[in-house]
Image 1 (tube, rainbow, N blue to C red):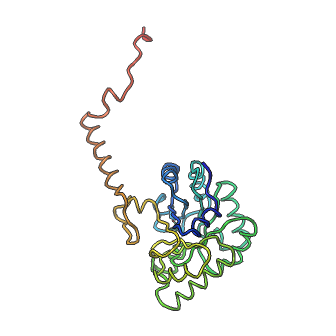
Image 2: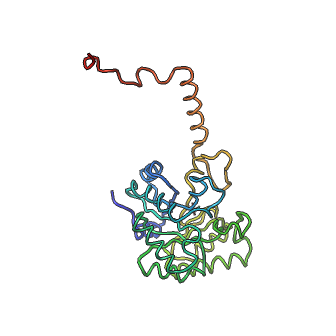
Image 3: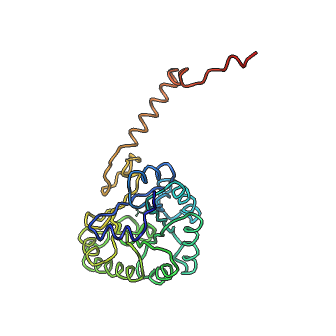
Length: 273
Ligand code: KIV
């Protein structure tokens, strides 16, 4: 099986197809998602909430993303894999951003990196792309800004903020991003940005008009019964399925119904004196 390349992804979009992307942070799920035919896997810094139980993405370190990206790239045979650059792994300086992105590629085999930000990142994106590091942009609702924003709010709802987002997207495109995630962008603004770019937009909580869509895998699998965001569709209610299976296991062990003799191996009597 051959790995999906960025030119192949861009060709797919130019032929009128939508791109599909999901997060994965571990080998078990990455294997399933890859074999199911997804175009792109994102090792998102959402791993901070999903895998580590943090309240937001701020505590995630570069070492965390390296580890989870390694878990994913070890088993993915076809999908394109992008690794998220965590909070403060790229903001301090262009040099640090280049060094950290290179670690994600060399040590974890990431095929691209994603960074949250607009104009302030233009020089960094340009330097990375010149160096051979494919970059996915991320604008709109930027979870790494949560402490400044004070909440996860939809962006680009009025004319001025829509114009601002469009300008940010254009700058990122000019700097060399191969795609841009639009997170939590009002759907008309997401449509306007999508129509005005030549690179694909990948939407999350931004409506149907982007050139691709991304979701957190555990959200679409309904794995957190207490977190069902409006933008997600629950395609399978795994929290119920897993919980029922665990209940049944507990009951059967306690009732002596599991394991039975069939789940064990008989001793080789001939070998015993
Ligand atoms: O970290 C993440 O999972 C993301 C997606 C929500 C786009 O950035």
